Structures are given as C-alpha cells and as structure tokens.
Amino acid sequence: MIGPGHGIVGTTQMKTTGMNGRRMLPIALIAAALPCGPAGCSGRPGPGAAPAPAAKGGDAPGVQEYRLVGQVKAVDRGAKEVTIRHEEIPGFMGAMTMPFRVDDASALEDVQVGDEVEAKLRVEREAGQVKDYQLLDLAVTRPAPAASLVLDLSGGTPALRQAPKRLQPGEVVPDFAMTGQDGRAFRLSDLRGKVVVLTFIYTRCPLPDFCPYMDRKFADLAAAIATSPRRAESVRLLSVSFDPEHDTPEVLARHARSRGATPPLWTFCVASHDQLAGVAGPLGLVYGPGKGEIIHNLCTAVIDPGGRLARLEVGTQSNRWSSADLLKTVQSALARPGG
Image (cartoon, rainbow, N blue to C red):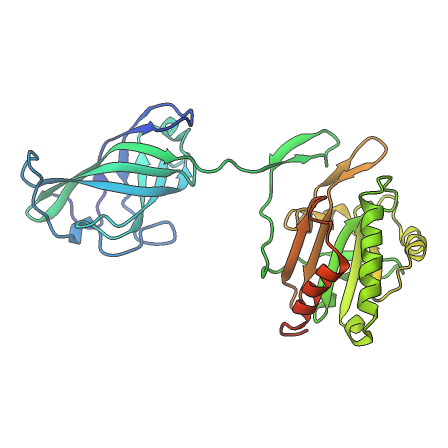
C-alpha cells in the first residue's frame, strides 16, 4: 500500500493530436515523491485524502478512471522530470501542480513548457487509500506557442535568437547609464520624479524615415511641451544613441544644435553597448552593424515619474504617433504619484 509521502509508479502512453508534427512516444511516469514547495504541489488535498467513488461499470472493484486536463509547467530532461498543472478532477482531487519522473530522458525531447495536455488517470485503491495510479493516453491537445525570434546582428553575422520579454505598461524600466551631449554621465534613475520620453537614434543614420524622422517627431513634441513652462519642468526627452564608436558628446552637441534641441527639456546622449544590453530587449530595440550603417528598428517609450513604463511604441508603423497623441500620454503620466 502506498500512503502519503511515497512515490506512486504508473505508466502512460503519449500521443499528439492535430497537425503539430510530434511523434508518438511511450512514457513511463513516476510521480515524484517531493514535498510541496516552489516546484511541488498546490491546491486541495491529493489522492490519498480523496473519497473513493463507486467504480464505473465494467471496471474492477476499487479502480476508477478520471479525465485529466492540464498544462506542462516545467521540463527537466537532466532529472527526467516533467511537471503538469492540472485542473480540478471532480470527485477525486483539486487542481494542483504535480511533478512526474520518466524512465527515459528521450521521452521528454518533444515535450515543451506550455503544452496543453489531456489524459486518463486510472486510480487503484485498497482499503480506502490510493495504492497506485496510471496516467494513460497522454496527448498534447495544444502545443505551446512558438517562441518569437528576432534577427540578431550584434555579432556581425546575422543570426536568429529568441526575442526577450518586452516590458508591459506598469513595469519598471531597467536602469542604465548614459553620457549627455555636455559630457556628463547620468543614469535613467536620476530622472525619477519626471516623465521621460525616450527614443533611440544614431546621428549618421542615412534613412529619412528612421532617425531623422524621430528627430523631427521629438522637435515637434518638445515645442508642444514647451508651451507650458510648468509642464516643461516636469518632462525630459532623451534621444539615446546606440553608436558610441562615433557619437561622442561633441558630435551629439553639434547634432542637437542642428535639430533645435535645448537641454534640459530635450537632450541627446549616448550609451555603451554593455549598458544598452540591459534595456534594449525589454524596450523592443533591435540594432546591429550593417554595411556602412547600423541596421535598427524604431522605439519610443514614455516612462512615468516612478520609473514605470507608461507607453511603448515599437516598429515603423507604431511610431507614426502625433505630438498631440503622445502628449496625452505624457499628461496622464504626470498625473500619477510623483508627477
């Protein structure tokens, strides 16, 4: 008999459904004998404490089958373990997350975190206690969405890599260091208490619909903000260069004058690649060397006085915003605590 705290050996066969291209696999699952914890179980009492419903017609006494629906939450091929979060199984157990070990690590090759699965759970009881259970006919009903890929040019050779998680409104923007057009070093966090509108450029950009276009956008926005001196004191516009090899403070100062940028309202600055590495992904910026130019996308972020993201526009079409439209976001951010 197997009581609480002991592993339960079972067998399952896994098959995929639909046109997801995964092969059929036999999998032997062993419920891991682990205490509840970060990777353990959660929910109401498990099988050992559940009531014993009457067996279905045709089943042996003490044997019952239930429908299990859940999602793969973790796959540890080295430990031969897969963790599934399943929904409530009426009459048997509440919703919980359970780890299972497999006999053969290769059985997990085609199992991905996020896969939605369905199976039959065959439970055998003896004297009112769970003696054994088997997970049968495990099937992937919906594969996890494919990871988004971006073109990485940072190494000089084009390569595809998984896109980093992009920040959502309300999340804190990662801090990073910059050098302004006046040669002074500062950090994004130094501007806490003000609304920051930030974009990324480089002064040598030859494409009129990219960096020069964003310069014109920021010039219009700066003019609109400056109509209210009180508002201008509470807002900072940053045009951050990702070309530290060329865009020195002296170069940035000349460029700023040509664009009509007047600190402290609108400042041109530059960040090192190491500093940009921590903020580029979260803000959706992609850039890398090309032939005679830097290949990049467009990105504009509005950051509230608490350092949280208020708005993020990534891509050419998304950055067709008007000054009047973005000014509404700025005004809304100013109304937040600290603004």
